[in-house]
Length: 168
Image (cartoon, rainbow, N blue to C red; front, side, top):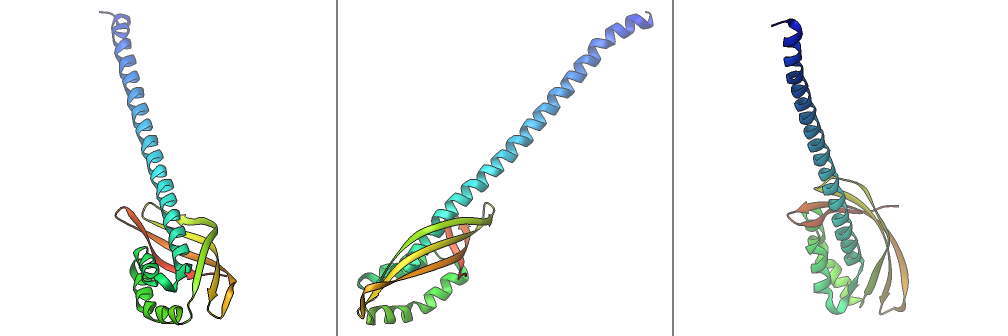
């Protein structure tokens, strides 16, 4: 057999190997892209869930009514974890005494919120909240404006605030 005849027979084999290699590269590239898109979707979903939980926690923190204060305090603690939970629980009795003695009511509402940073398990959120605080000495009420930074942690399927600080 001549070199030319052998070359013609091996030509299609090399072509098949080349095409197979190209298909493998396309499958690998598609898989990597799909994994990256999936990870990005997880992060976007996590940020949205954490934002919702942070907004609720911020409103719960500034919404108090002496007539159902135990429920209000429990709502804050249900959305908290770690140091924030422990500190709030420790101060709850003092808050209860002051709010009850002065017949305080406060209703909060979210003005703005945004994600500072985050990943699928922890997200930092800034929240701007307004509230009107009324008490037995001031039935008209005083407006209050708060900016809060909340560190949110995923615990199972729930997001909870692990720290909360008021910022300028």
